[in-house]
Image (cartoon, rainbow, N blue to C red; front, side, top):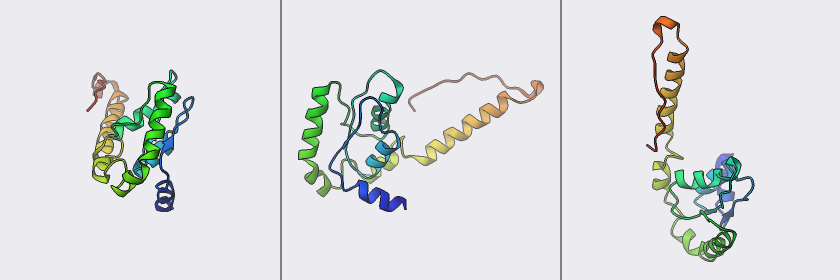
Length: 138
């Protein structure tokens, strides 16, 4: 079950993301289990997913710019793991639930609007509505 899966992940001190192909759903699971994630984004999309997940999850730390920064950050977080676990993890459950990554209500509303726009775009010509897609951080 998912709860057991997350409890097991929550036993980790720190999650080290691989640079060439990031963790994607595993990184999300680790954040939800309140385990700090360390990643180093690179050029390709698959190597930037970890950084996007960390930012969307509201984590203030975890994104390294260089290989040495990655090693330093991983070491520092591993050394502080016991203290972070005593405080309830790297992020509070409330801040996680309110982050864009885990706010299911916000996601569902945006997804519903996107589906409605797609349906309107494929309606018969006389019912078509014109629209412009705007991407924002909200």
